[in-house]
Image (cartoon, rainbow over all chains, first blue to last red):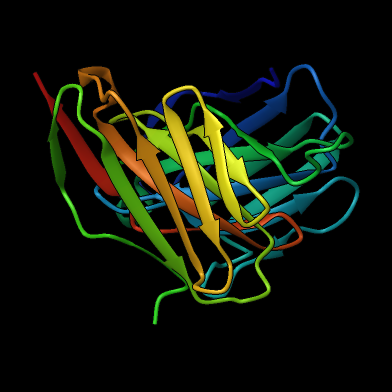
Length: 118
Length: 110
């Protein structure tokens, strides 16, 4: 099956620093990747849609200048949390939408990155 | 009204029983529906997807979709303790974007 990786799996940083999270589709090409955030005991909330070669589309209420997304290739999207603060501590999960095939809208999720901001 | 709502939990069933998980959605134009399982601290894993009205079976899992009633459900037969997890209903609202329900915690006790 399709595999999506994320790196790092967890990160602890000081308030005010920036953190970059990578999302890679390992065995397929993904024109679209999605970034989600999940707070404890809550469901996944879509943050943004990342399209290869174009600007990301952010959901309402998500600060695009704070959460920088770059989708430089068909297999890699990055999320940078700039000037992180404790309230940004969360579980960040990416998913990749398969490029071709019958199940065009099936998404494969990465293992997630747990961010803790001190 | 939330876009995707799941039946309130937590749900507890004995081993071997049928677990029934329900989900309603508000957007009549939604075309595809997904059930994910999420273990604590892990990312969601896809169990089933369904596009057409009716039932879709895969092993011990059966997804049911009724677009007229805007309702989708997941039945787990012969529930096992390893099925204990949070189950998330997700609806494809547009361009592959998924909206998730709040999740239902299922506990299968021996």
